[in-house]
Image (cartoon, rainbow, N blue to C red; front, top):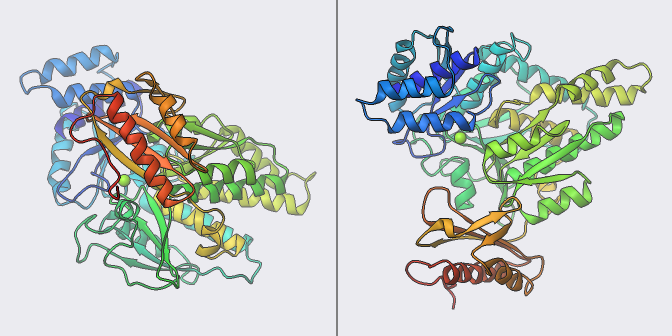
Length: 509
Ligand code: MG
């Protein structure tokens, strides 16, 4: 933590701007902790500096001084430039003392600092961007953040108020016993009380952070969080421990659990923006960015039904964020619920002009105005569970949709993920956004042959980033076919890459 304080100060000096440090381990167990470093425009740390962070973390105490000098030299940091660092922490008990170490590191570099105390990760990202854009993005205070979102949401609620429909404003919110729960309750104080009826569960008063609750638990376990009343057909949302991820879910009248993950959220948002662009006559290029893990049904729905271009990139938020910047309006979400929408400067200017453009009809101007508030409702720095919740509720309200109607927009293909232990994961290499395997020779051909035996099937393999494991993904028309395909592909990986231990076999056979 102390070293990350030093590194943040160096990054601030190098960029001649304020940077941020968030103390959190996100969706991981309460005992874990870590840091996320925030760039001047509120984005995630650039790859070069991830490398420097690794040097710093792995340096011995004796070598720390020389490592700092090495980073300073390599990154061409001018130490005479003043530095400024914003810091915040999540609700983990360890975050309090770690914050002190972090501050010691920052001040050791004679840097200024502002300690925001408890914030969600996306709130800190927001503060940093607001400050560096001289408040053009909003006020760099918690009140400013809530006011901006509440104003945009309430404006959209009024603009879309045409009555009727099945929309319900009732929401059960799983705060993962973390900082997100506290911040939602603070946010609600800024809203007219009748607009959203949110009951916050897992607010940290009883349970442990992320324990049997939170977005990651719901996504991985495919079941509701504990600590929530089970109510049929009631819309539920789950945040993760630092509130930068969100998933929706509900239980239907047959007691069947339905998860609406990042893919479902992304398609809902992209479809709505597409409608607004058409209605307003604005000519801006809209795109959706996914990874290979996005369900094939979502890709088909977006590209064929909604006619929105889809780009596929390597796994990892930074790749999605980077690709989304290539569009006038880029929507990206990981299936786990982390994502947002990015608007280019050109897009924002055109939207603002269209709101007042006398050559447009009143209806066109209104659609542009809806889009303007939609931009303000978006935390463009990074995925933000609260902002994403408000975007989704705005759309459901505008369309008069229940969570069930939304879920029925397309049906996910059954899928299965497996891991194969191998002697050396570098034996597997991929291309085409990890969807095609180039090494070992013959593996991709073998996968193609297997896929051809199934309907609507897709499968890919990729090496883990951290361990000697190859990850296998398969989807197909039925649960049985998806499982079978996954095990067959895993078997081929085992055969062709020196698998370790037993050859993968489907449990039933
Ligand atoms: Mg998180």
